[in-house]
Image 1 (tube, rainbow, N blue to C red):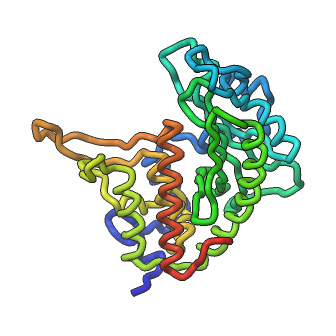
Image 2 (cartoon, rainbow, N blue to C red):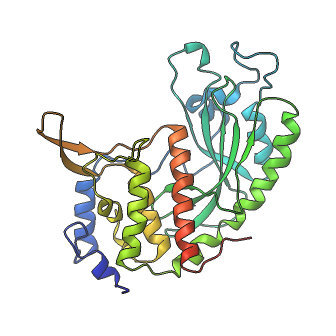
Length: 316
């Protein structure tokens, strides 16, 4: 049975708020101290700023541990080429390393957005992004992915559907040719993902369907290798919106609420430790580059599958 947004969120885990003020007050208490955006400046970073955030972007050679067969892929050269196509780096982060010699070669993740048009984005808009992962110390292949960025909640989604695969290039062979050719393929596919917000917004989920979406994401986030879940965090908590405007029962809104709760952390619960004593638990934000990308890809596939089951076909 289909339910309204009021019914969907009218429970112990989904309180009904009389006003935006009430919602903002409770939200501020629940998620106090969390950043609004995830490594995103909203403008093009200068090369000096990029170097300060992710110095390994500027590596032109391979780390000394690599063999002669290893072909370095200088990320900065790709960044400069994409800038000519209108895509500029708006966010950057780099993995930590205990080996100081790897600091200038290790894994990094960049977010690039087209900034060469006069479009003024507002709350609720979705824009296309390119996510670029690379390393020249052997810790990562060159990986270019299409992504969507939702202005409303400033959370990034790596989109990978049946018609959209990320470009992976190993550091061997004809590296330059593969990178250039593949990059334009991903750029073209990225634009097609912009159909998802409009299409998914037309799909209304009932209470059971929202629960299925949350349970799948909960398993993805908290299960161990054997599928066991020990966290006191409940699937229903993933459906709690963090802002007043995210109370709609449509698939696009519900997906974004779940995705943000999975990635951003801050969810609280009470469990038991090994001695059966009460223990308060707060989930952490996903900061690791590989885990971030892996979770976002899998979450997108969950949303895409739900859309397919509701009669929405992926963009060709």
